Length: 254
Length: 329
Image (cartoon, rainbow over all chains, first blue to last red; front, side):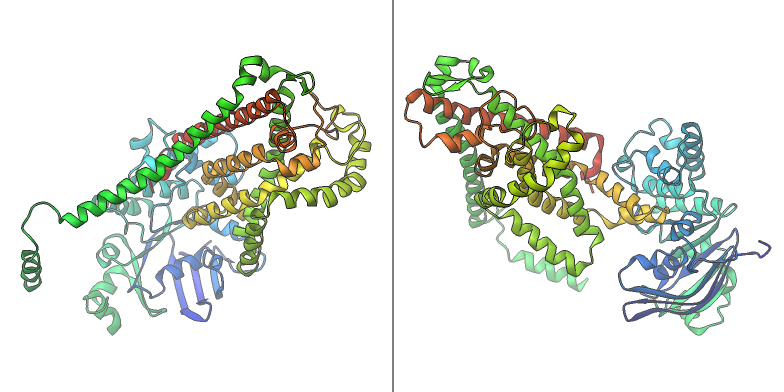
């Protein structure tokens, strides 16, 4: 891998039934950086990142064409196993969704276990490292057997991040990860995102422009299923090239 | 601001009395009284039922005491009654039925909720619910005329020739018997169990499955997670099936062979259950002690059902405790 890009999206189109929600998206996603996807509700942001780890196809009657090249492999190739894709490209959802009946430990260990890691010591190490990386270790280390449902919303979301990290993915997709959290928990997650960007490629969907400005290195603006503008965050916010982007960043459309 | 004054104005028009309007209070109270009385009717019925069963059992209880539970003889002519074989027969057939029905209904429920295309699953769900509503006599007749010949000719002989070295699968094959009754019971309780489990799985949040899939889980791994999420509900559904199996009289008496013996010689042998003997002998019983002994069996059946239900509750509560705030969502 010589390229500075971790993922390259080529002519991506997506449908729900006959509803064409993503139209000819071309985009290169930088390695070890935070790329934010912003745009008004219904513009296709969530669909877009769900196309990046083949979650989109789980919806009945959903369809995708085009390429998403990840480390030189088109993840939509016939011989690519979607479970491989999802192991390498992790995802964090809008609403914290830990497995409520499992303990904190078992939540984090779920991924490694289903991919064949049985060694107790190794699992212990993975769980600890992932929780540390997700800035949750200090809060839960004394009671890893506690059910995940007993944690606060912000802790649950960090647990979900730890759960994704436990598979040592290369890319982490985040779908509005703070929209269900209080401002303090949201700020913690944002700090965490910056920390994670040192080691991982992060793509984050947000409807919150300030958040995009705070956490991202690059930002893409989607509007009605089309990629309107994409570039370094500072440039897009300060000198938008497209009229629509300007309207959006100045709050004239939302 | 304008809106604010408007609402304030609206509330000004309401009576300034600090109590709520009288009509609301009486309505509230009436409804509360209604629900309370309906709920107490349930308690009352169970109480009266137990009381009258006890009353009817008095001659038998006075005569045999606890010996009735461990007695192994049932002879109306001699006036000797003991229910142990019936208790064992009931518990065994129900347990076997559950053992067969649990995986079966889990499979049906998962097929309906997870694996079948929506179009088919709607039709199949309807059929499953229809099966749950078939009267037990119909199951009994079907067992007698279809299941027994089929098992006797096609299923049992190869089982005996391959597993015959085990005492459980040796001995003569009559067609009816312990295993046949258990199978029929399993078939009878599977529909209701799978219908409940299907609803359970349909209610499992999709985010749970999505989270597993996003971690690279296969569909089966995600489904296993869903089963573990729904486990307390699965236990509850199983208990419902067990309750029905324990109390089933008509269908069982038509296929089990109705042979009063402590233990059958094999799974192919005939046996008896508590509900079956009630269905069989109650109409013909004339002797006071005989009638009383039968009512005593009914009382025992109620008690056993109660014990099973309590155990099941305890299991569910324990699960809920382990699962912590699973219900908080």
